[in-house]
Length: 286
Image (tube, rainbow, N blue to C red):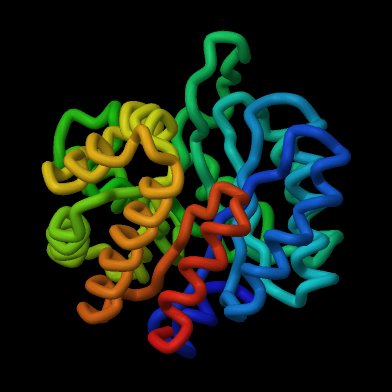
C-alpha cells in the first residue's frame, strides 16, 4: 500500500526508520530490532540509502524486501540522487518495482568530498520530478522544521519545499528536532505556503551525548536549554542518560499526539532497547 493512502485512512500514522548494517553478517541480526518494532504494528518502516556504490543500495533493497515479505509491513526506501545519474536511478527504480516496493523517500543526499557529484540531479525536487515521469511510486520528501543547514532562511525554505510538493511529493517526513514549538510553527508556515500534504514529525531519542551533538551539527537542529541540562547532567552515566533521553522523547511524542499531528516517525538508530522503550510508552496512545 502507498503511504499516501495510509494517511488518508487513519490519523496518527506510526513509522520507524532503520539503516542497513555495514557488515553483511549484521544484516542477519537485524531481525531482533524488526521483531520489536513490528510488535507495535507500524504503518511503515523507512530504510536509509548510502551515497555511492552498488553495495549500499543492494543492502537497502535487501532489507526493504525482508520487511515487506517477512514482517508484512510497508517499506519506504530512501533514494538519494546527488551522486547518481538518470541511468542509475532508472536501474534502482526498476529493481524496486520488481520487488513490489511502492514507496520512496526522495532525497538529494549529503555532500561527500570523497564521492563525486553528478549533473543530472541537483536537488531532491529534480529527483521527484523524474520519478513521477518514469515510475508509479508514492514519493515522500524530507523537511526541516528549523531550516536546512544550507538554506538562506525560512522564506527560501518554504519555496523549495513547495517545489518538492508541486513536483509530486505526497508526504513530508521531518528532520529531528527537540522543541515541539519549532515543529508547530513550521507546519503553520507550510499551510500558509499552500503545502497541504501530511507533515510527519521525526523524533530521535538521545542515548549517546557525543552522537547527538554530531547529529545536531549535521542537520542544524538546536538543543533547548532544558535538554542541554539533561545531557550535561547525565552524559557521564550511560544508564541514566538512556532513561532521561527516553523520557524526553516520550514527552515530545505525547505532546505531538495531543496536538493531532499527522503521525510520528521515530529514528530508531537500529537499537532494540530504544524501540522497546518507546513502544511500551506509546502502546496505549497510538
